[in-house]
Length: 167
Image (tube, rainbow, N blue to C red; front, side, top):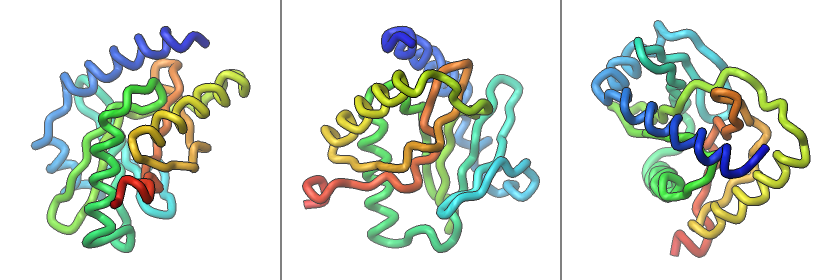
């Protein structure tokens, strides 16, 4: 697995994600989320498949107990910092809040990552350094999936600002 090949594939995925992303359709999907197929449920979010004619997305909805108030604002700040990180394991993301529902949207990644453990370890180490440089901490990398054959982290619910970034 070549880092530059991953970076090129990541750029293409990012371009298509933003090309077809429509906030009004996402808002409607959030309202109608009970009609969408559930892909999984974790400690903080449940994920649902949101399909359009051109692109498949994962709509991840926070459980009501996730975070509120200042904690939610810190998570939004962390997500904004994440957007500034350029790394092939970070998929394009959008997030928001509709009424009392917090959500984020990313590309649908259907296949588990099956690359070599050595390559993945190297990429994860590089990702951890990149996140730290942006004032972020994240240690739950086990949820790696593949999009178009390229690995991506799919769950950012435990993303946190470092103590230095909060000050």
